[in-house]
Amino acid sequence: MEPTNSLTLNTTWHAIAPIWEGGEATVQAGLPHTQLAPAWQILLLGDGSPTRHLKLLTGEKTEVDVIDMSLIGMADDGAPQRIQAVPAPRLRRQVWLRTASGQRLAYAVSWWDASRVDEYLQNRSLPIWDNLASLHSELYRDIQGIHYGHCPALEEAFKEQGPFWGRHYLFWHSGQPLTLIYEVFSPYLCKYLGKT
Image 1 (cartoon, rainbow, N blue to C red):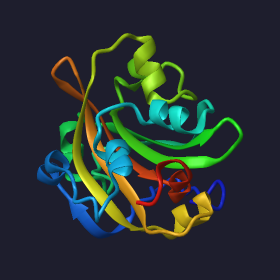
Image 2 (tube, rainbow, N blue to C red; image 1 turned 45 degrees about the vertical axis):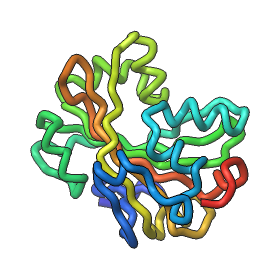
Image 3 (cartoon, rainbow, N blue to C red; image 1 turned 90 degrees about the vertical axis):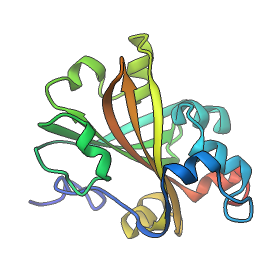
């Protein structure tokens, strides 16, 4: 299958090759400030909306460029292990989160129950949080892991050198897993958050 552009291949997603990873215990405890600055820990380990945080940091609306929506069936898709909590068949959605002026700030991939995705992503061009907030859905962001590593495709897309910080988490709604989300943030955010 041919890529739709130099940054997107519909048969894959952009995982970072880890230099270091931490699981739920690390997420709960936090990292030493010598490893990750406090402002970055709030972004990565906090349970708030990243699209809201990005808007507050940049002063610009956070917009979404959807680059892939693919049915992946029963496959685990190379996703974090907790993908097993999301009912199959699954749909994978990949997006760039950017400012209204075009600066890419983050990459996100999410996996959904394909039979229910339209209930929650009624406007697929909006960030997930905007879709869910419009439904007044009660949600719990359960951060499962944090990652630090390299990804050449993200270096090209962000126009920033790695390594990159990322995380993955489950969204829960009414006691059920709704989606698994994997996010990677651009080092461009150092402009607002300081060094990592």
